[in-house]
Image 1 (tube, rainbow, N blue to C red):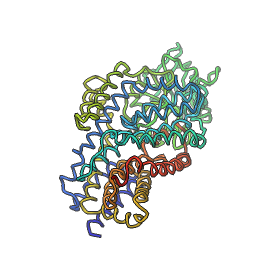
Image 2 (image 1 turned 90 degrees about the vertical axis):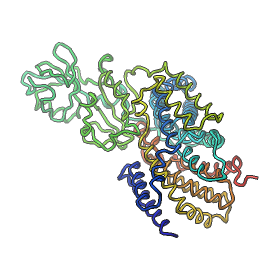
Image 3 (image 1 turned 135 degrees about the vertical axis):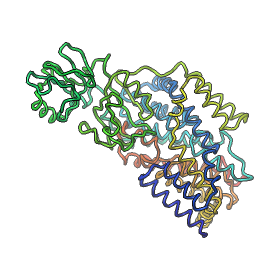
Image 4 (image 1 turned 30 degrees about the vertical axis):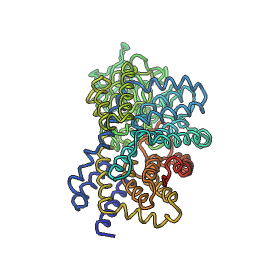
Length: 594
């Protein structure tokens, strides 16, 4: 072992610890690793920044833009309505249709985007069928991961593995549909597992943050009236001390509904829609001179359809508000909306919401005007699950055009007329020129954290290859289990990748393991492409923990899941997929081609 090998192992160890601890953002860790590799002389400055000009990175952000165009054109809304008609009220049929739909969508667009645009529809369908969303959302997320294995552009590991393979001489690279046979087998296996086994292990847990008429939120919304001797008379909402109450709206004596942001000075007889716990309400009413409305609780059912709406939102995978509280982001002033409740780390909260740090997977029940909610739906930091009443549809008149752009790009790729990055870049440009999305929306569609993570980690693969570290690890693996044959080595690499992808991104796991897999195959005299296929499939098996992939995170709150739900359902799927891959992969990609 050389000094360079020791340096690589040390840097890798620190990177893994930082990834697991989540003390720093993963894209920042990747950039720190890039700089460290350059300063230690393990890679040249040109190699350090080669990731940013890599065809793989260009392909990834072009896919994000195309996915954004498909999202904003409402293609998913059309698909969701079609699913509803086909499924009827049969939960098994609905599960199958959801998994097939998102799996196919993920083959041609970013899998997180596919989950994000189908998530509201699936939650809505579950409520219409009076089925717990927890029975449908894990199948949705996991089918997106498995479906991404069908094509070259379906998921970043496929794109990265193909790019890494290009660096080796005398090894044919993958074509667009080379991944399809194994990808379809994996997706079919996942669907059968969910229908026969997984659905019995999924929790039947209704999300109690849903904005429905019988929601417990109604217990925390009350209507009070300002009395003649009230301390609030003559004051504005913002100029008064409310003793823990949150004023959502003012109903003046003449019946006009006003925003709490207005300059209205409170008068005797004004009625206020307030949010608080029962204890806080009683105490505040006594101290401030408020009387309870004799008609009783206000509740969501009495909110006028034309003025106020309820909506359920979660943080988007690229949100900048992770680990920030509502107070820190000044949510109410910034968006003009009120948060009525929060689903946070498995608990439903109705009070003291301002200081709770938001996490990926948390869901918020918010209330506000049509205009404000429509603006929030376009905001890149939030993903809107449902609204009551519904908001207007997306740009559905652009849907046929966006589908045509996607199909045109696929034709250019599959016929070999243009390289993948060029064809997808043309598709991204056409999405903007067609009006499916603006240039600003195109930038918002790109998950920049993933782009910088990939660009920062690609030089790590170069360093592992340059220093012989990948070859060294491959020699160890072959030395330990090579006596049992190439299939055993493939199984070992598959398990290693699957474990790594649970604690770091699937892109980072692919960058680290793909060079090792290729070198191990070369030493065994096997086909490296079979080993790379195994790596990218394993990198998409983030089923054990919600933190394993962003698709798992964004369904956590809406599905009312617990951490253990993923492990209980996922461990058996992981084991079954391992067996299926080891049995079928050598048949489709012979380890020792003749």
